[in-house]
Length: 340
Image (tube, rainbow, N blue to C red; front, side, top):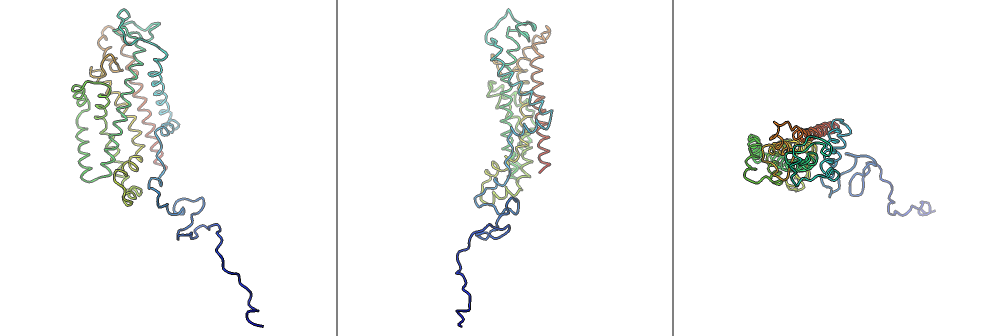
């Protein structure tokens, strides 16, 4: 018997059949196969085209932050309800309660609250309730626009200063310190004397004097964020500093910015009321809550309290409501950072 007859036949080697990859087994290309259902260091290396921002959870939007703060804080919920109610009152109220805010009715001047005029009338015969709604529109719009614009300017300035560091950071923050040293009301008085105080001028003037505190807050956050790994990855991958500021640093300061926006809007409403009380706010025939107080002060010796108390209460309610919402957002941000 020959050797070929005794040796058993062996199967020809064929292509390997693909099977399920074992956890930790080598995958094609020399990489480790990811473990199903796992994250972190067992999930394998990121794809080559994966950006650093995709490795991070997306920052919560302002709406989600407001809802989270309202659910976790009764004070923030109360403030949010007040703001919604005042917004509906000012913008939807005139559609239901119709008044003439254009013509003068001297025979109806300075009427006390009564049927047909729940809050009385002013010195020109205008219905105070209708005027309170119209004036609230200007106060809320100017305050919200100025507060948001101030937050945007301060956020960009602070993020650039904190990310750049060094000499540029020192120069930019000395400008901020010099601006804070000048009283905002003095700058506002100069601006509204030079330019006619329209709504646009007031928005820009208030924003240009209110962004400084936001810049300092965001700069402090940026000094910490610029040392994080995902920001360093932008530099390693050849990304520009502008991309790092806009895509990675600024979005991750959203919590601080959201809290600051509420305080900025409240401060803008107070500044607008102060200018209007001094006669340098929105000019007639338009009106805001501060202008209503200015007009009522002229007849306060006659005891026409209804021309002063309603706009004063409206300003107080809105400012306190924004402060309550801001406190709730701040507490929510602290709890969120504590869980990380």
